[in-house]
Length: 489
Image (tube, rainbow, N blue to C red; front, side, top):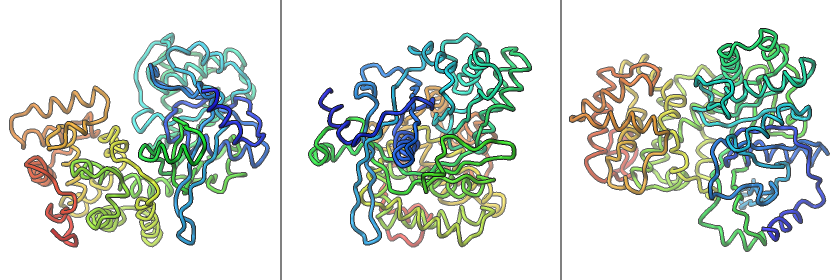
């Protein structure tokens, strides 16, 4: 490990290690190849001093830790340039100073809350991470991310008082109005715990919770090329993460909020500060994330490993084009021409031959993602057309098939979700008849927020579910499902 650290340090070319100023919840591939990478770049470009302390929610057990390599790791940016030539640019990120575990290191995390240098809290706790879970004030740690934030803010308020000590929050979860939702839940926990009115006022007035939108495709560690990359780089970095060239961070600065910190937009062309993040979010969540989530279960059932493999096929491209043009774009309140242009960019990014983005990774918490990313389009189509959208209905049936394991490759592709969701699906799958299964699935308000069990949608999903469950599914013959007549059988 010492040899690896020395090899990574040589790539820094004398860049200093920064002071910890950002407390980050989440240590997955995305934040490391997006926000931490951006922070490291602005440190280098602007001579800035923004270090990151990462908090991981789960105990790592026998898994490696970033601490083992002094927080250093490699981000590999891959794609094609304007001439069509392949680009593969490594960058060693030096801004991460250490990694803590929320459980084992809770006292250290509380100490960081009291430290005046910590100014920013960043997070990516998945689409289902910003939720309300009742808990005790003295839980060590509180179960949910908002409860942790409430506890840490109170610790800070007690130690440092009310003057210019508030934090600036950059949540990267893909939920609507993520900053506002986080603030509301923090205040709810504070109220639950009977904390003073002065503290609640300080949370609301002296801390900035920004709504954000993040966009970069980050497939993670390129497992199939590990030996080739190690030979090219001269070292083997287990935390290396690959990402596409495109990257965008949109920060909404509402009236009365201070300038976001760190000053990303001043040094990074892929970061912008705007008055309203809504248009950026709508098009990205509906088209890019929605495209991923809609096609994901069909690719997994059809034994297609990567996004690029699926979208470079005639069947996958036609499915997404039809989804975008007929089931998503007409139901977004944004200029159609700009949406079509963005959709074309999405298709090019998905087809990037130098990025291996595995559907298996995308499938994590799939039903929660469908609810956020695809359900608004499905309901808007159903309301306007009086009939269910064919591709989104097929996708919904495919998610049910995937979670229940009703397809030949099920043993090699188990669903990835919380035990609570898996238990609900097991109960749903216990019904005797397919119609009962589909009806229970659509009617589950815990999954969808309200019942989706409407006759037309039920019949569409039922037909697809029975077809997908009846034998091997040939991804190359999506036309046989009736969703796209442009794809040959």
